[in-house]
Every structure is written in structure tokens, then in C-alpha cells.
Image (tube, rainbow, N blue to C red; front, side, top):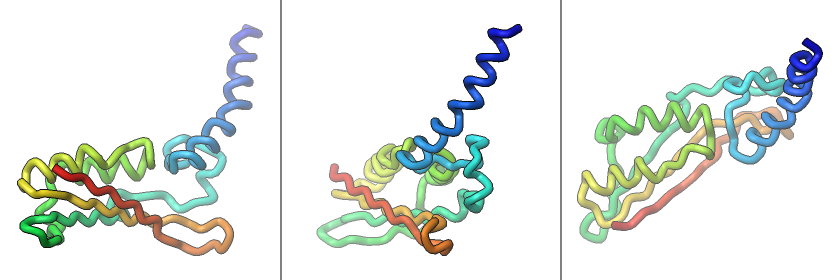
Length: 132
């Protein structure tokens, strides 16, 4: 019984440090980790993540409308909002690249964040470009 109690107490003591590392290093959602920091940030919703896809075809960049994105985009949005930078956008970019027959694909993600220093909502912009 004492060993089990020590394990539980050890886990409770270490878990906040693990969650802080995941949040700081990979932008993992604190609400999904049951972290102490979850009450300090608004919850994330997949619909808050704006995915912009541009395709280079015949030397010109053309933006894809939201309705033209593959079904994988919705799944990517859910996982990206939950696991942050641990979820790579490359599979989604590769899928668009293979389906559209384009020369290059540029994926830009706009995700809202709370700036701790100002208390204001900001946007984090991440961009990935992949060639055939």
C-alpha cells in the first residue's frame, strides 16, 4: 500500500513539470493534459484553426477555397489544436500535393493564442512549403 501511495504522490508531483514542458516546447493544449495551466488559457476548438492552402500551378500561386481541402484537413485541425507542434502538417501537404498535381504546396496555419504578457488574444502563424 505504501509503494502505491508513493507512486501516486510521485506522479502528482512530476506531472505539472511534464505538462509545462509539453506546453512550452510543443504547444500542447493544457486542457487536454489536465494541467494546472488549463484555467489560465481559453480552450481551443478545431474551428479556431484557420488553414490556408496555396498551390503553385504553371508558375502562379493559387489559393484553394476551404471547401476544396481534403477531408484529412478536419482531422488535422482537431489533432493540431490538441497536440500542438507534435502533429506535423506534412501529411496534409503531401496529400494536397499528390491530389492536385501541383508543383508546390504552401500550407499556412493561423491559430489563436493568449499572450500571457498582455492578456490579449494573438495569432500564431506557421507556414510549411513542399515541392513535388
